[in-house]
Image 1: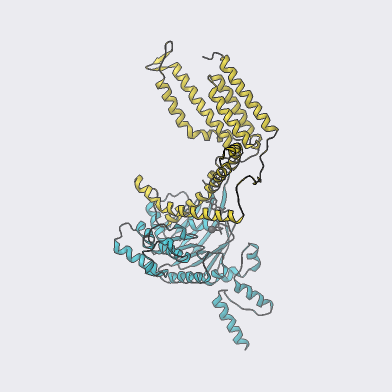
Image 2: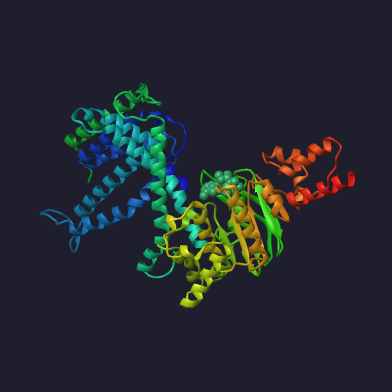
Length: 270
Length: 289
Ligand SMILES: Nc1ncnc2c1ncn2[C@@H]1O[C@H](COP(=O)(O)OP(=O)(O)OP(=O)(O)O)[C@@H](O)[C@H]1O
Ligand SMILES: [Mg+2]
């Protein structure tokens, strides 16, 4: 459980996609989302799907891992699928199958559900191939320009990375406190909602105290090492773009162009 | 209650890419009345092992019997059995003061008692809390104070009181003296001896302090990489300087001195507890004279 939190969904291996600069991956993801949204027919989605397949193949992440990340959304996708079918108002010339369910409704619903799944699968490629720390680094670097309008980007990134850093520590601590209270007969599993929530007080209070203690210690440790934020800081791991990033950006540009083209051309499918 | 562990194995994060084998076919018998010391370098599986003994970690493979409760792999325990077991096998985690949460010392010590004996009335609870507080040597004046206002040593006593309040027959403590000053350590060990003589028949401590183990335990188990590689009396276990240092473990100071004396031709046959060592040394001295 713990390591799940530590690395998020990160799938440790080395691959083309893993080695991409996190900034490019974030930008590529945004571009991919835009591409999926501008696609207004199935050909566009198919193009995005093929792109996704290529990305998965080059990331060496098992398809099962991507599918697992879709699990969380599958219910929502199904739900919107059914709603879309039911609430699609048949227009003139639509083929109504029965009641208010029409062929066009099913097609629209399938379209939206596929779009949703494509979006989530795409985002999971980012989280599967990039550690949370690297994502934070990437975001910080991308938001750098905001420092000119006095947004404390570095501090925000620091807060985010500290939070990420302490998730496993606190998860560990929670685990330990839960076991300590269980040893004292605490019962977290029975009773109604209210009594279950109440049962967590013996966990939450020590956890909160420990979080404050750790924050204090971390503050002191940073002070002792003369930590300052600001422009003079250098990075231990410098992000750098390589030919790989260029290749992927070109591929993405091709995808977007292709989708725009397919939107205009729109070969009749059904 | 007797504890019999037969080839218990445990892996953290089984089935995931981060799987760690923490226990590897550990077998150990702990008789009623034992004062067992568990030693071993960091990450050797000590904490994992002791958490099996009150069912906090379910047995993954192998057999474990605690008293008349079977904690075999695959046997699903019902809540009542587990609760009963946990009231009789007290577990004091490392830095137990981090588990305090109530507003007063009284409430915190009473927490476990109320959980295990929900039908207890006010008087019973009071008697149990007072009894536990007396045992750990805390003054009753702290009862209405917030546990967070106490000193580190006092907090630890409150936490221990919160475990022994149910009068467990077996008490397990994970590095109970870590972070205490020398006087606090001695007092805590004296407390454990008091307990051992009265309500708590079996005591198990995990410790990195060999002197403490040699002075207090009648049996020592040495863990290494998830296995028990040696069990026996302190005399048997500690009489192996090379073996223990190879495992990144220490020997008691008495063993060290005895070894140095032996190099000088003075052989002292001791069980390495400081009391016995001094006695044997005095005997030797008298004999020479
Ligand atoms: N919650 C956990 N999740 C994953 N692995 C764990 C967890 N707890 C312990 N381990 C691993 O299991 C092994 C045994 O750990 P354990 O805590 O039992 O060691 P220990 O002997 O108590 O060490 P120490 O003297 O440092 O307390 C170690 O390799 C450790 O990394
Ligand atoms: Mg431990």
